[in-house]
Image 1 (spheres, one colour):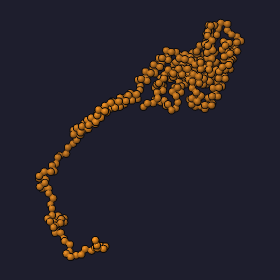
Image 2 (cartoon, one colour):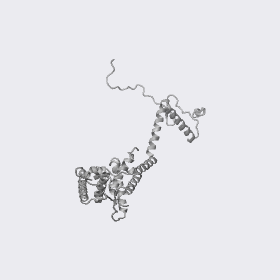
Image 3 (cartoon, each protein chain N blue to C red):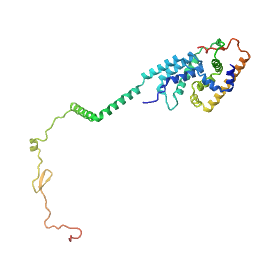
Image 4 (spheres, rainbow over the protein chains, first blue to last red):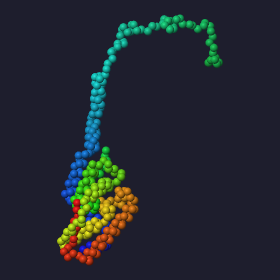
Length: 142
Length: 178
């Protein structure tokens, strides 16, 4: 007791307070820590999503060198094509390049020397004979 | 997605929270109840923890304060606890701790809270200031005064025990009743 008094008078009380810090019972500490850890394991969706993402990336990285991505891409393309065939609605097919169409759907051409005017072909006008063409600038001298 | 988990090191946090609760409520079942309650709430509201606002221990102490207040409010006031006589050969260190514990119990609730935050939860003056919404300087001054009061009280106890020490041994007061 005497030693405590001497020590207490000279030393800082702060140190005493730190040393005397109450400690929990070890059973209490272990059981509470275990409970906290158990609840942490049960409720961490973020970790699960991250794990799934990491596994996907690892799988893609492993298969990329053997052309798995190209194969997967073409498979997806084929699937889309098949789905389009199944789901698409077809209009009635119209044959456009048939002999009948070639014969009856011909465009009428005007005979030589005539020009189309409206629905009729009329004779084309010719330039007046002997009319001089007016030139601008000096003649070509070579 | 990878937010820092505030409860990743439960043992360390349990020790701090328990020490804080024990400094305010007394070492024993009440402090354990307050610690358990604090961790239950912390697990429930774990997503509300923001690492930018402070360390996990400060966040947990904020929760534990309310749990301790609740227990203090629920306590039925009773008379002074009976004193238990301790054997003469009780270790010196234990005696020191009992003296300190008795002196702490004589402090006001606010002073005890400050001591619990500083020396139980081991928070810095700045962290305490943030928690209590005060200035760091104010907390430092308040802590200094609390320590002075504690020193005086311990000195008074020593002088009184010097005058009339019990021949049988030291009297030990048990923790306050639940």
